Amino acid sequence: GAGFLGGEVAAAGRALGLDVTLVEAGSVPLVRAVGAEVGAFVRTLHREAGIDLRTGTTVAAYRTGPDGRLTGARLTDGRTVAADVAVLALGAVPATG
Image (cartoon, rainbow, N blue to C red; front, side, top):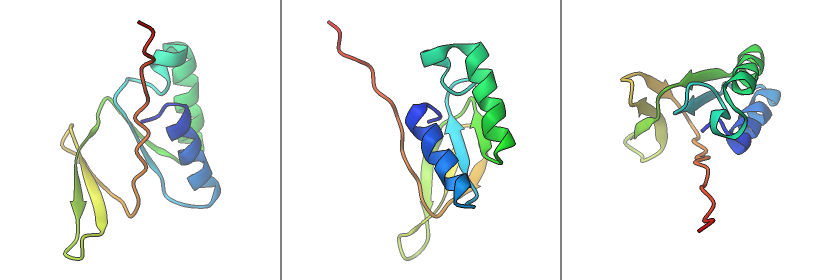
């Protein structure tokens, strides 16, 4: 997810020179936390940093090689992403009741 944690991990990966794909179910990062306008600004920052941001989709399944190591992910929109490492930043909903 491209919330606060996912975005920070993605930015740190890019700062280390890694190729990073960030997958977000919403139309823009942080839309539930800060709204669409700020989320669109954050989307621009991620893309300018070289992060491959995929919005409006989630991970449907992970792919592994014969040795069991991660090789990528299939997204719910049908696209695939090659990957050596996956960080799941799924967020939380506070129990306010």
